[in-house]
Length: 286
Length: 200
Ligand code: SF4
Ligand code: SF4
View 1 (cartoon, helix red, strand yellow):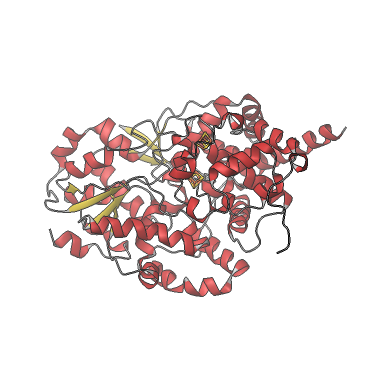
View 2 (cartoon, chains in turn purple, green):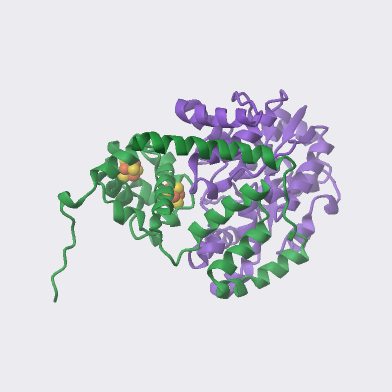
């Protein structure tokens, strides 16, 4: 199976471990992934507050480039996944907006038709590969590792095609497939604070704190997530959380990292050491 | 105790503003709101808002322009879409928050102490220049522009990111910057034309 890959800015920056583990795992599974040629920033959550039409056009350029090939586009970052899907919906439902965006793209020689499918790597792993096939690749099951599966907001809301908006389960299935155990917690899709952790820490840190605290309270040794901003908030701000509330010290891994570990890929290929809160104790202590 | 008018007269509202919201993408169902408050209950930020999402919806549809546009609420919204999927009347609350943010920036009425509108603008500028966003540069730029003191508080995090190789100080850029610029400039030209037509 072949896919195009839309990294987005985070996977080239603070979310580097996500890119590393995603590429390593897909390669080991025999899935071919090619980076989208000359992709630009999707606009993320921020740009929609500045200019609506341009937001759609930014995402539109990526989709137009992707359309040159007949492949699904994988967007691992939740914000990119949402924005690209939102653009497909927005341009389909609003003829006037579509006209403007299509014309602007055309003026730069780009052709947008809206025929690309934007997918999340979790969707691909569970629905294209499948749990049974994944099981064949598991060499080193993560027995005894207790995990809080954290989906965050934008991958399931509001456009997700592969999971439930209220109680998503695909990542739970993956966690079970790698031999680990899911703790039950009700905060699977609760907001991590988004960019408020940086812009308004008095508010954002509290949201991140609630998540790590509750994960630990429910017996999880690690949180596993699928979004670079969630990972950043839960992992990067724990010193500040300790100063403001209490020290929690729970590592946050990407689902691609735990899958890679269970497949026996070396830690160095999976960016395990890029966690600010080290995962070593959690991984060794099972 | 001095007397203070707590509630607005209907005559002081701006019905044109309400009409504008309904006419924008995402505003369509605004008038269907039954004020059930489910959006406020679902919202993880409503605890900090000056008006809960339910109240923002109500104020917007009655035309309380100033209250809505200068509220903290719209800038606290993290676009998590929890309200949107719960709303029984399928009101696109998140998109309404977005269109209110855009209007607030346009009118320059956002709360000055909030760095969020500045972040949004800087983000846009960086995309226009490079086509991509370098998070390190964006955040540094943001704090230097708004709050030095907060920047100092972030140094620990910066060092942690450096230690784990998650930071970079080189702006990432796309190859065909001209192509992207052409697209954005075509939209600018279109907007100008529209504004001219609306005037004449
Ligand atoms: S959930 Fe929907 S109908 Fe209920 S108050 Fe909020 S916007 Fe109105
Ligand atoms: S999208 Fe905004 S208003 Fe709606 S629940 Fe999330 S933070 Fe609250």
